[in-house]
Image 1 (tube, rainbow, N blue to C red):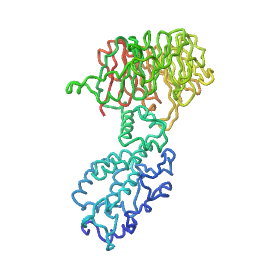
Image 2 (cartoon, helix red, strand yellow):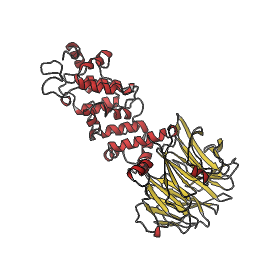
Image 3 (tube, rainbow, N blue to C red):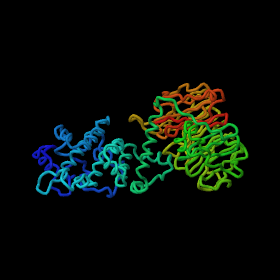
Image 4 (cartoon, one colour):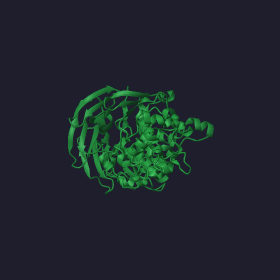
Length: 562
């Protein structure tokens, strides 16, 4: 052991680490927050706590700028003493030095040194790796390593997998499920995680304890991948790969997402469903080399494959069901798990003209439909098939409607160039937004925070190609840009709404905007053939995918390689 560090230095550091404890490193000496210090020997199987309630000074999760420290180690002299541990240690340190992360280097070096000093020999001297019968697991118990891993963020946990074979085994074991859960909640927060869980088709609205039992490490990695892709979408330097789906016979008039599903409807009266994650793994290159075919529709709905007697004009969906509106004036609800070829699960009749737009409240309990007959009808999705409320006020057909997050309000637009905000609970018109110079054909609302500023705004896309931002509370226009040359047919937010707003227009352009400033961040380059057509009818963002439907019946998936 003399070739590692001096015996005097080892004894002093071992005493500071609590080396007299025969079970290894005494975690009571670790500087931790009060929430963790109260249970220094906490095992991974101990009851977990929701980290969203532990933010701030009392949080047991260390930020990269404030890693956990061990008394007696972490100095330059102590860390430098690990250079002579052996070729295996040198390999681990070399891998670590290649990681450009000062936030992660210090706790890992501390952990390396702590392993050397973990247990004294029977004679009272420092425990040695070179003594017969000793090994890393014996010198530093597994539960101690897992406890230290709790101080690392999500990125550091991923990098730990490549530093040491034993650590990789521990990090990927079920013992660390809670560690990954804690790191994900600390990074994203509960609200974002619920959005990503829904997009992946995982169970939502669970307690923190039940979530820790149901989700495994691979699920948390998928959630973080969606977050990373959503954040990087506006800044990918390369052009996307494009996948074209030509299942529709005629224009694709509407499209929406519900959980991991993509629904399309159009002039051919067919409602089709696709699984969006399938598009992440298909590229035109694999089609050529492995003879793979583009993803096909998982199923269609309705007797004989037809959802309505006329073209499907609008859609709204959750992952359990999808609602359709048609030229025939009917509104139908279809369960995703219903048998193929079966009739609709619910039929809503009440409009006297074509149904032009649909919106579901956040909880999916209420449905609002807008029609050419100038009315909005409110339905109870899980109740009877009669409308609960009739909202009157528009002097023209209702062209667009959207729900407001975390409220009982919806926003509608009419041909008369006015936007109205309604209460679904009372049926009252709360405010009227005026000032747009053209009829509005698309709406989208956003309530959230970006760069520590809170926003509660409404986006509108008009016939003249303009995109306007409205303050929902003050009922005034805040900003306007000439986003397109023709009608803005669609406005939608990304999975993390504060990151991107996408607009699609009949001018054949797809553009990404920063929601808080309405600054254009990216224009998606489309094929020349698409520009020659009549443009796009709808577009949605899902992680690093943009899905756009067009008048020529083609659905195009623009995907960026991470």
